[in-house]
Length: 337
Picture (spheres, helix red, strand yellow):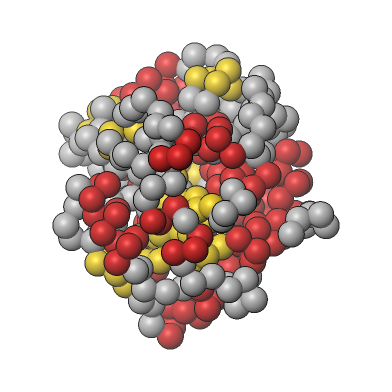
């Protein structure tokens, strides 16, 4: 996901997720409710949506409505739509088949489309769309790199975007001991946001969603961990300068201290420490990769190829104590239509 300051004037200058691509928006005054859905990408009737089609069949070239909007919002002119080839479509189908049951159920009923965009500024995003009755639907955008890079390489690329390279002898690596593509990581992450949009596993995925339903102060997942959307219950020092996909604020020479501090927190990744929505998506993702699929998950700091510090975030007792909250993702909802 990506995190950087953007001024997006759609509705409420809301936070849009990606992912895995996270954005920290500069909030403007809320517009009147009648203005919230002014952008055509927010209206379901501007899409061709068929919930009877397979999830794989919903992989489509990004339409001009989406492409031009994100070029504008991200201030980029190099975004280009990408349509996966037959081999990549098989990878996508296999990845979709490995999602938790509730994620699959939500995508089958509410996913409009999956778009791949080359040169995308983050790993991916999930954005919301509404019908005339304010029911939530979603579309996903993935960076084409997720199809091209191995999962460890993809996660390492994302992680390094948080650090200033002030010491060329130092390196950071994320290793999941798997030859799978980065798509598995970002598909798990973004599909978790989709579930959260529908079922509010956190109080809200982004502040702009307050308009569409009952807003809680906390939930079982956030209680005791978060005071509010992006303020943790305990002020962990390492969180102060965590930012992804824009100008980094943490020197790589401080990486060992940062990760040592993180290892004493309830967060399973630096990205997950950004806010409660990212906490949830990262937590489910790495829970699924380690507990359900049997992969490892290790973060390491190296000097000239030699390990200085490494740890396995999914193995700490503080985080394992939160594993029970993931059970809900493995049970479809009988009352969900």
